[in-house]
Amino acid sequence: MSMTITEKILARAASKKCLGPGDNVWVEVDILLTHDVCGPGTIGVFQREFGRQARVWNREGVVIIPDHYIFTADQKAHRNVDTLREFVKEQKLPHYYDVGTPDYKGVCHVALPEGGHVRPGEVILGTDSHTCTHGAFGAFATGIGNTDAGFVMGTGKLLLKVPKTLRFRLEGEMPSYLMAKDLILKVIGDIGFDGASYCAMEFCGSAIRSLSMEERMTICNMAIEAGGKNGVIEPDEKTFEYVRSRTNKPFEPVYSDAGAGVETERVYDVSQIEPCVAEPHVPSNHALARERRSVKLDRAYIGSCTGGKLTDFLAAARLLKGKRVTIPTFLVPATVEVAEGLSRELVNGKSLVEVFAEAGCEDIAPPSCAACLGGPADTFGRTKGSEVVISTTNRNFLGRMGSKQSRIYLASPYTAAASAVAGHIADPRDYL
Amino acid sequence: MKTIRGKVYVVRDDIDTDQIIPAQYLNLVPTIPEEYAKLGTYALCGLPDGSAPFVKPGAPKAEYTILVAGRNFGCGSSREHAPIALGAAGIRAMVAESYARIFFRNVVATGEFYPFEVAERLCERFATGDEGEIDPTAGTIANLTAGKTFAMKPLGAVAPVVEAGGLFAYARRAGMIK
Ligand code: SF4
Image (cartoon, rainbow over all chains, first blue to last red; front, side, top):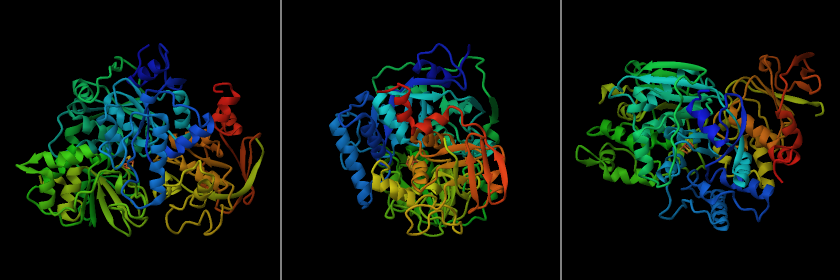
């Protein structure tokens, strides 16, 4: 029986020859990811259910990355990181990226592959809905809650339902002004906010293959914004190159069989796709940037696991070089590695740090989730009133960045940067 | 499972987890009993301004037992704080047209309440404050205020897990873990 990449990864993890959509199978988990917001609760469940003396199923398999509430005076947030620290020490966990140490990385979904913890063909579960990001590397990756994660911590297994696969074939050459974010916002706009509920979203085609690993991450990151269980892209030489530069661990790539049955297949010609935004308050509210020029903005925000990677800042810098922003523009690199890249990478002989400073952006914040999810009252970039924000993040939910009165428009880094210059929503083609 | 009767709170489509429990309260850890209770007091406080308060200011819990919703309830983040906040606030069952996947799974895993599905658009058939009654044997939910009864979809494999009190209790009962 031919199977999709998602089915094949799950079959292998469940030690089954074949399986299909709707089957419930116990899978062996390779990596369990957690962070400071859901880690303490997961640890609480694990200790309550397995006992204080219990050991995690596999020390190599647990990766803990504090990233959400880092640069805050909130006492409970500090207490939560202390809980992680204590647990890591007790359990002697080797993969912990502690705050305030040289190990600190930042946003978990960018940090996880950076740390070499994402490998093709593996099963990655995380206590964060954007764990689906890691499907960009040809892995099966999905978000789970604390109770499920506590169960995985103790047993290394979880009962999963095999999802149907929705295939998205994106063909053609990427226009210079278009980014992965435009592609995924278009797809979500077409299928709707719950259009991929319980399904795997498989992305393929020449346009997908042409994307960098970071851009592929942007695509899979937002699968959850259509309700998808996982996003996935078949691995190729680019994937292997990235993964091998980060880890020596062996891995076995998995590919969809020719003729594997999928629920639906949609085909796109990317040359027909235009820069866009998602209007408040759901990511499926698709609108073309050029048709929303009348929307005045108070703020631009470039950051998060979706839009705070090095590629994202490079794009923003290419647009901003030699120009000035007209609204406060907040920059939050996802990880320390991205932040270092901002000083290293050059655009027209100037570092990104210089380009952003000359363009009049706010001082670059230290890496963390920051205002992507609002967070404690003192969070960098958090909205406080009725700000209208253009943001490279993944969610424009009511109150997502802090204030219920503020309105968030999601966009690519090109569109966000062009809009920061214009002071209203703008099409990057007018500024590049 | 026994009959569940009480006041109903009604929301519509696409209620995301940020509305169920806004991110600023995610510093609370659900396995710490006082913080579990505290999460309940913030349940649904992220709904748009002008919505009827789900938990009255200063009250320890909501006066509602049943939550009725439209499509895609619980979309967004994987925060288990969301079903926990609703359970801690006093919700014992909810009835929606559809749920987001991770939220539904978290409801079952925590055993906080019963997540029923209905084909009918119940958020148009109930108003906040109506008296509701869920009869699990008959598979129905009644609006006692309006005097109408609606069929629910069977809970299937999910029922015994919630009944047992969640994933761990169920797995122990079934001999999957010690
Ligand atoms: S950057 Fe935003 S979406 Fe990504 S993990 Fe952090 S809070 Fe979640």
